Length: 82
Image (cartoon, rainbow, N blue to C red; front, side, top):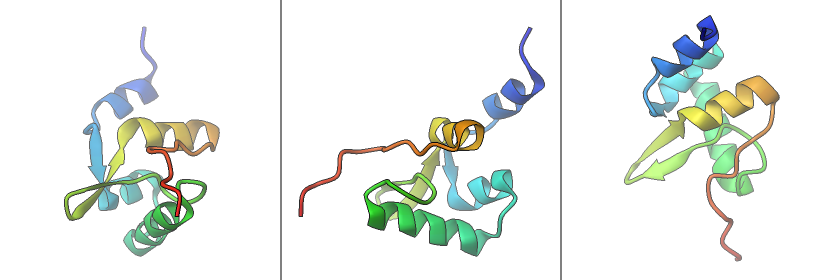
């Protein structure tokens, strides 16, 4: 039998808008965008895990679940050396 939390996560889209992730985390939209920017600027070592898809940012559901359940960040891509 699946856990209620599993069912709630399964109902979310695979890729969430930053605003949707903010709602899940119960934080302000502006805070979510600040965390998304921190993630991009840090190369994935802090903040809210996001991917740039064209001109928009998306939060993969699996990365958000990992963050919420373990407190660990998922590195969504290998950092490019400067």
